[in-house]
Image (cartoon, rainbow, N blue to C red; front, side, top):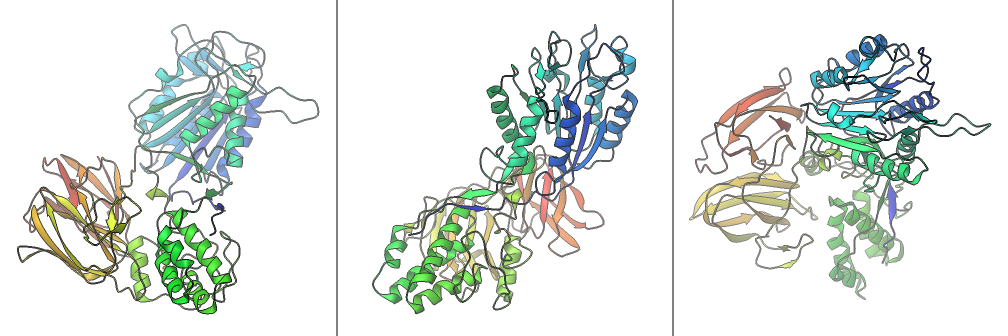
Length: 591
């Protein structure tokens, strides 16, 4: 069976404003401040990699050898008029100076060492600007040293602890420094006949971003944590006696600095023994059944399962009997993999060409449910699990996406489930007993001739939840009642899953559209809901409910949000947890 790893393009960066300010000073009018070699090179290299749309995707502003006034104006202009969803990055490479009162200053071109208050850029002033900035994700990178003495090939002056200077109260701020408060930040040594090198710290950072080797967890993104870990290791491995430092103030989740040019290496999942055995049967009709059983993996959220299905079905399409190969090609073609005649480029490099037929209305409905702009990804484009990066990363201080996790499955007829539960096909009814509020999930398995899932949940003969519209993908519904329930589904391919409790998401949090009820989240007072995905509509109805309230007609708060006013404040009324019922749009919720 196939099973070779494959490299796919890295996922796209989140759709957001990404803004960077790069400040570098290497020439000083005060002769007591030694000219630095590296800031100019550092600024050019960092600007290039941050501005690259295939790597950093930042809009970059640079200030090189500016006066103190020019630096302050540039910082003020850069941080003004930012929105909470913006990601801002400020980088400084220069001398670091401290006055007799232990106040830190960054040296500009016209800074006088004996008149720091009048001619330098004070760290506390920069902190105040960051505090006033509305962007909730802020990255500050300082390639200056703050050590007790000045040495050849080092930059900076005097000892201080940088972390305390940028503590502040702002949420989502990460500070990276090239060295400890008692260490130098070294410049690279020049080599005759070669370009002036950058500093040890910034050179390592730029190299990691440009090559993708800073993607330590190999997920296709270079987060701030990845960048720090990689740079730390590179600096420690050099001859420079410095230790990069990282401070995190109120940030939640991961801040993405860049996407990896190296892409994502995926190892295919192991095909279940039962399917593998069927595919090796001596009976063609049995092998066709194995092809059909594996085909749903092509729609899976797990890229390892998608790759395993693509490789296995491709081998069947290329080597099996015509009738079995044709069935494999049918499934592959329906998911934009290879051509309908079985010709296919190597895995991960899909051939181009028109589809054999357009999407059906069912495909459109499924695409809407899964949050896709079209039913099938274009050949050569990333799979859905590549084009939804926010499903995997919470923006620090801003977004944590709550996913759907499976728990105990409610069927009695059982087979192994990849998440450790039990599941079955061919079952359309069952019972469940719960002693507290719970969540009722419907998973559309996307089988042949799938008409979507229609669901009825009853208790004692009375309807508790009835869903007559066809559902595709995964939907979750809050059930406040307790006791024994009876459920029925319209299609044997519909999987019924129980999740204990109403959920316990923490703000800030994001929820996708058309997934039913959201998980419950903690918000005892007033909070803000901002629509991020209108799903083609002009307004969105928000219904705030208590997951413990069995009165289906009651709502704590109901608001209609429009594109003219995309955010609204809702009130939890002192409840411990609340949720949004039958959410028709994608939202971000924050305090």
